[in-house]
Image 1 (cartoon, rainbow, N blue to C red):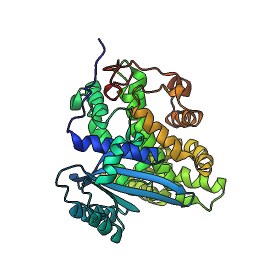
Image 2 (image 1 turned 30 degrees about the vertical axis):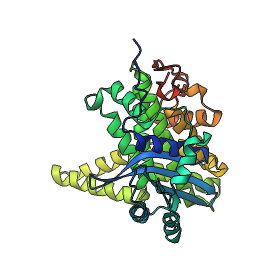
Image 3 (image 1 turned 60 degrees about the vertical axis):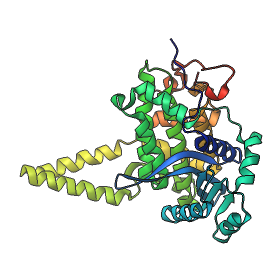
Image 4 (image 1 turned 45 degrees about the vertical axis):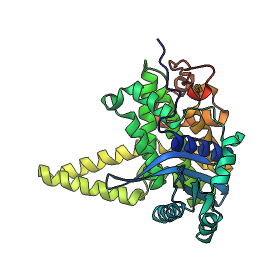
Length: 369
């Protein structure tokens, strides 16, 4: 018997407004994440209501935190201070406050401090605008689907893993973060391909992680703007293989590890064995596959558009099969499959078991088919 998702959005007006604003910013061409947790030393500090990413020019990137308060007493001036503080702490390029407060003084105060204010008048118009209409799963519906598929924390806590993946955009748009997203994608694709798993939750989460990985790659491409194709290939390959600190740092770790093993065993020969084994592990990473592909794709400036496609696929009412994605998105899936050592034909041809829609008359409450 097919399962169904709840059609209502838990939490009421606040979450509804967050979804409307997400749809609005998506319509403007932004890559958007909702409910991104900022953590410090494993402590949850705050949530960024919306995180926006844009590639306005080949040489610039824009990251933005959006603070949303859909309440009778929104304390708008306080939210401006809060949003500006988050922007500065996270090193973002811009911040926005969306508030039901219609007073012109609020917008003027925001402008004086370089904070864009979407006031009550704007939000009222947005509720009636086609730009805020959405025919996709809400954040709550996707998490409900994910929790049901993996039985919450019992089955691996996919929801928690996705929250950590989202949180990484705040501080991990580097090669270390990209490699962590690659690990998540490989794990989720293996779950999806192993089947049978209820519904398409693993595939949806894989799509979402691919989107975030591509955002990281696009952000990293700023580091090789003046390079030719061969130089870009080397830059990317070394980054995917050794991480953000590079080959020298990785080899330093290898030497320390080999000395520790040698000291523990009392055998000088252990050092050579360990160093050789660890270097083989590094060389076994198929980083050239990614370096070759993104050295060319990054120069074309289309990576962020493909990232937006994967994000949309993750939240689609009917999640597309890999073979139904656009040609550029299929190329990404194929390249990732090659990097992971998976059969790209099997990945692209995979067709998961689906959920039936909750109600034909209520698109917003439908489940992924």
